[in-house]
Image (cartoon, rainbow, N blue to C red; front, side, top):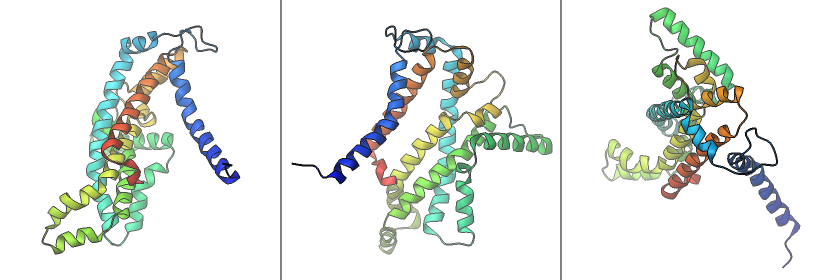
Length: 268
C-alpha cells in the first residue's frame, strides 16, 4: 500500500522533532561512560568510573541534597498558594482577574538572571528596612524558588479545571453536598492531572534552577547546579555527564510513574 505524501511528510517531521529533542539526552548518557579523562571523540573505551567519582565528591552529594530539600519545600508551598489561586481564576469572576492572572504568570516571562538579581536586591532592601536576613539563608532560597514554581502550578491546575465540566460540581451541590465536600470529592479529583503535572514541573524547575541559587545560596552551601558549574571551571571529564544522566533517569522515572496513575496529558 502506497503511503500518501502528506502522511509520509507528517511522520518524517514527527520523527525529526523527536530526534532533535532526544539526541542531546542520548549524547549525555553516552558521554557519561567514556573512559577518556578529557571528553573527546571517539571514546577510548567505556567505564562507570565517573559515576563513582561523582558520588565521592562532597560538593555533588551536598549539592544534590540541598537542591532536593529546596525543590520539595518550594513545590509544597507552591501548591499551597497556586491551587487556591487556580480555583479562583477558573471558577470565579471578580474585578482585576486578568491582572492577577498575568501577575501570577509573570515570573515565567522574566529572564532568569534578571529575576535572580531582582530577588537578591529585594531581599537586601527587606533586610535594610526590617533587619530580617533572607539573603544567604535557606528560607530565603526557598521563598525565591516558590516564586518561580507558582506559575507552573497556576497554569497547569487552571487548565485542568477549565477543561472539566463545571456542571458536575453544581450537580453535587444540588444533591446536598457541602462546598467543602464538593471540593474534596469532585474538584480535587478533576484537577488531579494538573496538580501532579504542576508538582512535577515545579520540582524540576526548582531542582535545576541556577540563577536564584547563585545569588542567594549561603556561604559553605551549594546546590547541584552550582556544584556542576564550579566543577566545569577546572575539569572537562565525563563526571558532569554522569551527574546529568542520574538527573535524567530520576526525572524520567518520576514522569513514567506519575503517568501510570495520572494521565499527565489530561493536564494540558
